[in-house]
Each structure stands twice: as C-alpha cells, then as structure tokens.
Image 1 (spheres, rainbow, N blue to C red):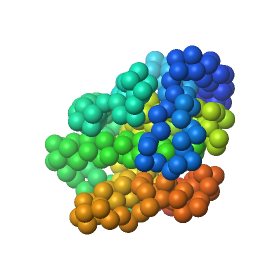
Image 2 (spheres, rainbow, N blue to C red; image 1 turned 120 degrees about the vertical axis):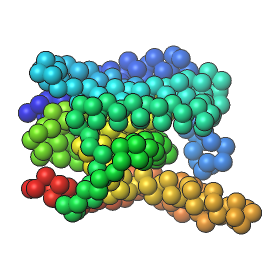
Image 3 (tube, rainbow, N blue to C red; image 1 turned 180 degrees about the vertical axis):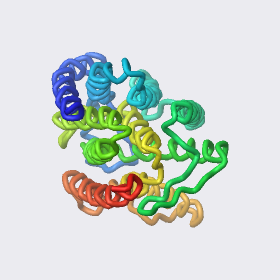
Image 4 (cartoon, helix red, strand yellow; image 1 turned 90 degrees about the vertical axis):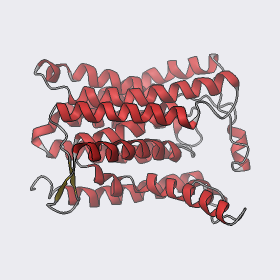
Length: 329
C-alpha cells in the first residue's frame, strides 16, 4: 500500500511542480548546449531547457520524506540514506549544469572534480549502510546461493568504483529524448518488486516506487519531442538511485543484468575511444555511445527508446528470477 501511495504522490507532485520548474528554467534561459559532433538533426534541440531533473527529484524527495516519517519514527532510515545519496549525486550534476548554463558551453565540472566527489560520496554511503546493518562485505552471485566473503576494505574499494561506474553509465545513457527516464523507470519497478518481496526490508520499496512515479510524470515533459531535458542534475541523481538501491539490497552484481543498457552504452564509448587511439583515427561505431550509432543507422528516437526499454524489461525479469534464490523464494 505504501509503495502504491508513494508512486501516486510522487507522480502528482512531479506533474504539477513540473509546470513551475519548466517556467523558471525558461526564465533563467537554462538552454541545453548541443554537442557539435553529435547527430546533425540534434542541433534543433539547442536551447531546450535543461536541469529538468529537478522535477522528479522534488516529487520523489517530498513523497519519500513525508511517507517515510512513520518508518523514521520507528528508527528505520534506510530509505532516507538512499535518497540523500541520490541527492548528493544530483547536486554534483546541478553544479555541472549550472556552470554549463552560466558559461554557455557543453562542459561543466572537470572529470577529476567529478570523480573525487563521486568516490567520496560512495565511500560515505557504503560505510553508513554497513554501520546500519544493511550491507555485508560479501558478494552475492545472482542466480546462485553463493556469497563470496571479502575483506571489508577490498569490498569498499570495489564497491565505490562500481557505484561511480554505474552513476556515470546512467549519465551516458541520457542522450535521446526519454531514454534514460524510460529505461530507469523499468529498473525502479524491478527494485520496487524486489523490495516488496523481501519482507525484512519492505521499507525499501518506498524510494523506488516514488522514483517510478516521478519518472512516469517526467516523461510527459521529456518524451520525444522533449520540452525539457533532465540534464546532469537528473541523470546523476538517477545513477545514484540505481547504484544505492543495488547496494542497499545487498546484491550489487544484480546491476549486470538490470543495467544492461547502461553497460552497453558505456562499453560502446570505451571501445570507440580505445579503437580510435589504437588505430590512429579509425572507428568501430558511426558514433558513440550506442544510441547515437543506432540513430545514424536510421533508427528513430522512438525506436531506440522502445528497443532499449524492452531489453531492460527482459533483463529485469531474468534478474528477478535470479534474485528469488537470494531470498529463498
């Protein structure tokens, strides 16, 4: 019941607040700068308001905090830890977006600055979750009953880099209208079902359910043709949310099937750069990341979003079947 209420409240809040946020972004002239090396038809998107992720961030945060009050009175704060972690990453994105808007360029914080901030936040989150008893230094292998014990510091280092990688992979996926929002909506539905299935941490369904509601409402503004982009503010928040939920449920490797689209997008970028450098200018893909390659192959934005979402849904179903063994279901 709480999960359904969280979805509805976040949906309505995001839908209503979206009108005010969009109007303010237009007043601030917070237009997106389009990559000069991107698909030529994306040039017409220049000037579309960015930082629209504030819409679903506000809707999700309010729903989680208000509906989570009974849990907090009972001394359970896991949903709040997840929210604060996602907000911390969203703040990095906001600073990055603000610099882009202020100086009218497509680059904000440096890679080094982002990496340091993201690693620091990941270490803090992991340490807090272990202290609260929601995280163990064991690595569960999805689809099996095996959990590999690791030294805590080894686990901490490994997990921090996984979290940072996940966050930036989600960020990289945000390049086509509605893509990151739709794919992550499916992922949030997966985490909601998993949290509801696991009685001990049923409270954890509150955050992903609220996120699902917020993203559903956001798509009214962000689906092709988008009237607003989520910006790094939204995509880094989403990345933080996905990573935090995987670790809060103590099954980080579930990110492999659940985040298959994020991984494919990231790997296409890595392969493209590596091959380009190794061959002194040759390319495997017409353009990276993968969604741009498919666009240049003739795929419409609707087709890219539809296929990527279907792949994510199928992999989430497989991940759910694998996770059932984790909880002895």
